Image (cartoon, rainbow, N blue to C red; front, top):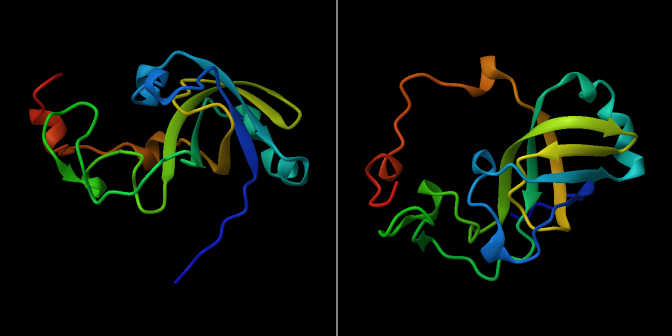
Length: 147
């Protein structure tokens, strides 16, 4: 089955080279802008009350798909679904960013870890009551060779 998504906006960041992009949003203090296309801007109503957002986007420049990858923070190979590697079959990324301000259909955010011009698929609010879990196991990340 094929599923199509409509791009709702574009993420603007200071990063144009994948090698210069932070590994994860939590490790980034870089700021960027999320531009939501005007026809989707009504969906931003009330967003300025939030401090953090999940950005769901397309790794549009991921050059390939692999089912076994070596994550950036480890020397061993794992199945792509056990990692956050961009070479996934559907090239979908997700990052939690801090919302700094809203200007119309543009959101200034901190913690960007994606390339400039990345297509935005969706925005969801970060909610600690829903998004945090206790007793989490992180597998290879806990045992990785390089902290």
